[in-house]
Length: 252
Image (cartoon, rainbow, N blue to C red; front, side, top):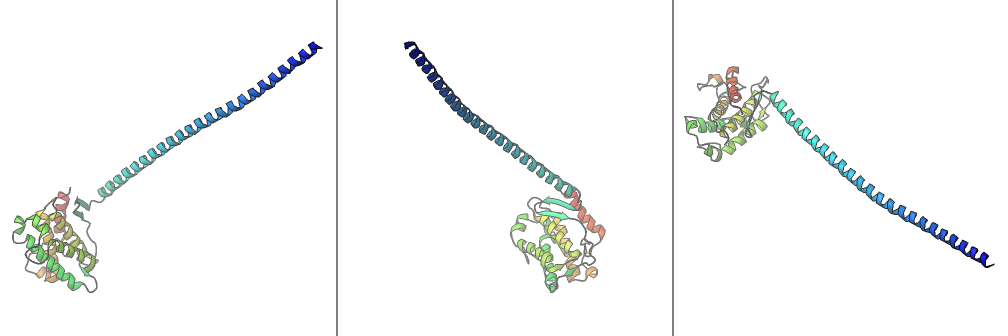
């Protein structure tokens, strides 16, 4: 009887130990797996974050490369455009020449009701250029004075520029004379610019407005005064091209 009880007690201990071991093992496996999963999830998230950062960096590099390539392409296109247009000549920020000749059939046209104002303004611009260039004044011209103060009569420097803009934008209609006013502006800008101070350019500006005044307010070719022949409206091809050659030869 005692032996039977001992065997039963031992068996119970074995069974209880097995249950406890099994329970412990299951718990250990469960918590170990959860911890490992947590670590793996954290590592995976970090790798994905690094990967995302890497992709962003690559995308940024790609975007920067694309922007650089685009800027390079724009520069090359601008160079090609300039090289492909021999009639567009650059001096500085103050003077850009478009030497393409006008093929308009009319020498000069005025906008409706603006003929008298245009003729008056052309005369005033001519008299102002006489103050600057005429009678040997160009040889002793003070460029700082030209840029800052009024001359003996008629228009100041600012008023002169305003008058050119008024002719080009408000008074003259489509005709070859529009190119002449455009050239007057460009030669004048080149002449007075601090970067160039070009006396010959001012001479050409004077010759352009001189000839326009003779034809618009005077007797044209019947006038006793010298005609320079440099306007597209009333000049001749050889003299116009010689004037344009001055720009081509002295361009930056």
